[in-house]
Length: 229
Image 1 (cartoon, rainbow, N blue to C red):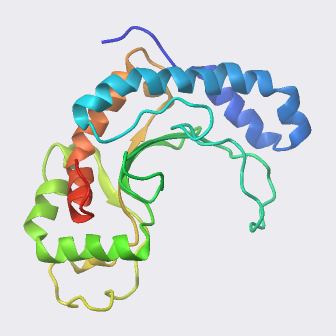
Image 2: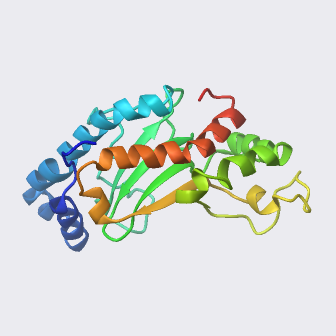
């Protein structure tokens, strides 16, 4: 196991301070902190995780590029939002499928936020066509869905979470044994993390272990969408 660390207490201190001072003047005065304690550690984490990701699946990317890579931009898109804070109050790293750039396709995700960090994986808000394919796969192969998410290793670390419809989607039996799954808008697994975990030596290996444990869900979704895993 690696003895080096990537993210530190200074990473979380910057996020907390940004949350309390979310304006451009403060960010410009503290941009060096972002570069030193967030952006550069994230780049190193992405590179180091790449070797582990290749062993989980060769079809996902650990892209360290500053633009278009795994690290999400810190800048918020405020064009259509009532919240005009210019910066995100968290840090996100997304390891996407090689077949597409959309965050709606299956992938692996690391979320850094004081008292709210987590490992996420699966498909967040898949688009209509993809959502239909996933629901069809669940409806036709309930035993495969159960094997993916109701048994170890997935069930030991993750819970399936996401927004849900109030009624079963059109075209699916209301008495289907997995009707609550068919109602989902998101097909994602979540495992909470502590700051102590994230700032400890060897966290990159621990994150890789989480991703490996959660990979049965990602495999199921890839197969439903006709994508390689």
